[in-house]
Amino acid sequence: MFVWIIKKIFQFHFWIRGWTVVTEFDFSKHAKFIILGGGHTTNWDFVYAMGCFGYFDFDLNFTIKEEWIKFPFGFFMKSLGAIGIDRARKTGEKQTDIMAKLFTQRDKLCLVVTPEGTRKPVTKWKSGFYYIAQAAKIPIVPGHLDYKNKVAHIGRGIDPSEGYEETMKKVMNYYKGIHPGKIENFKLDERFI
Image (tube, rainbow, N blue to C red; front, side):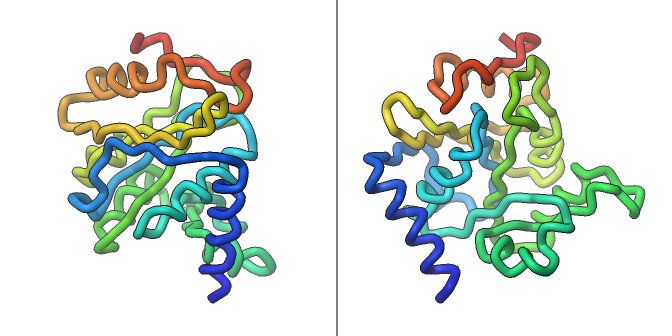
């Protein structure tokens, strides 16, 4: 019940602020996929993303430091879909391998990742999402929050089997001309433009 109430609060905030959802991805055909939260430039992105996903009939997941799913925040963070990851890599495994395993351990998984890896402007995006999707054989679904038009947009799935460079070119093409919360903090990865 608690989880449902929290999700409805996010969804109500999303709606009352005048936001809408536009999607080009058929969620009914995929049980497992990665959604890119590109253009992540402000903490408000989390609030609007949670509101957006309240409209869909699946659970949204994201990874955070393992410490955040322990007491006192653990129950709250897990209820929002957080999955704790050991970022110290005590096991010796790569973080991308750990995250790819999540897809083999579950029947359904929608994992949101921020490809820039920070809310600050960067010109080289992280590549982990590609290697996770490739290992798990799942689509990469680009998405963004358009603050200018108040639209949460989810694009078409991208097949990572086409190769790293081709996949990244398609990702960069999707993010051209978007309107994130703080436009000054957003940069494309110029290697793939």
